[in-house]
Image (cartoon, rainbow, N blue to C red):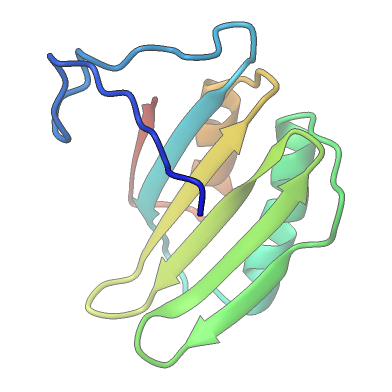
Length: 132
């Protein structure tokens, strides 16, 4: 059985980002997490519609229509596959109305446009975003 070899920077730890080294600088990778409080209960159709429109906002080519699933314990989840990666969407009704969007792409996009679109789409009372 082949062995798995990992390389770790001696200065890095699981909670530190200063030791993170870009192993593939020639490959574009952009990540954005957007979270907020919507002013309505998010449904399956909202998630599908949001992810379709997010594809336009980010100028991504959709490979498959959005996929969704509901868990009685955790709420809704959705995913869309783009030619240049994709996005995940999560929604809770309890303990609080809340959503989290995780976007990972190999093509650059405008994070401010994504945040503005998301804020307007869900008519949020609060929204935050972080790029990685």
